[in-house]
Length: 622
Image 1: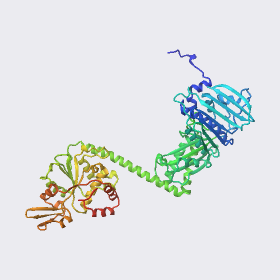
Image 2: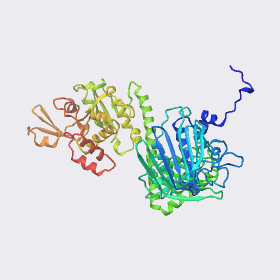
Image 3: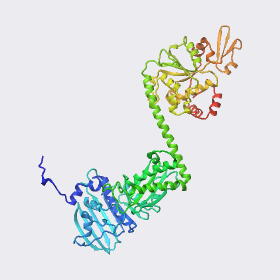
Image 4: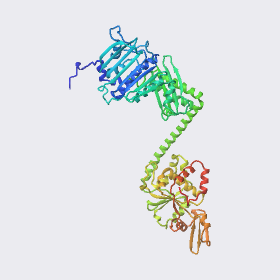
């Protein structure tokens, strides 16, 4: 290790300090640093406009050679000998702590602050740099190469008064990536600046593509916010202006209707990408005022989520977090922004009452949706936990479920309504064909209508939980038909209105929680007979009125069933589980059927009644 003593302490000259430590001056040694250089040059021309000089800025970009130039028509950089004998223009561009912005005599609200370092950082970090100052019929030209003066002369000129700056950044200074000037990014900066400086024209030329773009704003921040948000709840942006006793001025504008919060903070025309004190004051005021006006307790992030707003402040002495000015630090801007947004929102709520009511309606709807989403999320989590624990048990302990002796894809879960029907079918399956593969689920009354209720209420329903548990399904987890405890569901209910409704409710549960089960054709209708006919030792079962009316056997004893609970075990065994008589019909999904189910099982009751009264489940296709 080298000896560390007094001689280890070095002092870098100004040029070397900038070229070796460019991050301190331009923020980074990459293309963002180059963009900051461009920002510094243009900002100086905007400074002049802000105090009444020059209403046009001409910019040229050569993206192949990475050469940028800027020409304004303002007062120009002063040149000539100063009292100490030094040249004013050279000192302005090359000497530290030298400039015209250290007092309020020449500049009021300066764009780039009061340290005068920005343009020097550009000049000394460039490969080649040229500055021309036109005034009093003369042109003073300074040319630098890698931070060293190569030429300085003053010659006669007929050019209009103003300043011309041209530079090409050094690759050994901005070395973190290949230098590339983005014409698009420069255009975006100038477009934003045009909105903040009404009456100032920007003319930008892309040398490589031979393209010229012009930016000019007549209405300022109102045009800016409308450009950022094409469609909104409000017809026009709401604009408000205020100032304080310290000379700080602030103009704000806002529009509701953006998809996310959009905030834009400017101080003396400079875009503060990281906000600062003015943004803090604005956020506080928006949250507090909107809650007071709405009588709600919305969170700040929620209230601003659909708001697009801009803050344009002018201050005599701007203070920023660093040389790149990404964040404004002036403490006085926080209460000023608070005041601006508080008064603006109150005024908006009275002078634009219809639009304000639309905003409140939007916030209320979104808040309800968010609360519902949160409830659904928690319900799904709780459901997963409960069902995962239940799935680990070998047996399902419920008096409403009579399991098949053999579980798996070849087994069928027969769903019935009530204990009476369940008891009868349980007796009937004892000697049924393939009876070991038949399980029975008895619904208590009518199950919940899953398509007309929120998911959290559906998942809390005991019938729903038992159905999912019996099938081996957990809502919220990936569907896997190989893990099904039953490969089919057969709905078997009384052949009447109530029975049909029970079938629709089961379909609704599956469509809501596990539509794949239906799509795979695993849902069946196990149709119960409405009557039987015995004649000379033979039996006929009839499953609809048409079958009864059109029966071929006209003689014999006809017995009509009022429900599954009134059928004998023998009748149930033969009619439901004997392939000779069984009416087990697959309910194949169709787009029309699914749409009808989704529509009719919603909150409206009358369409559902009309629909159920007309259908015959024996020929119904989902």
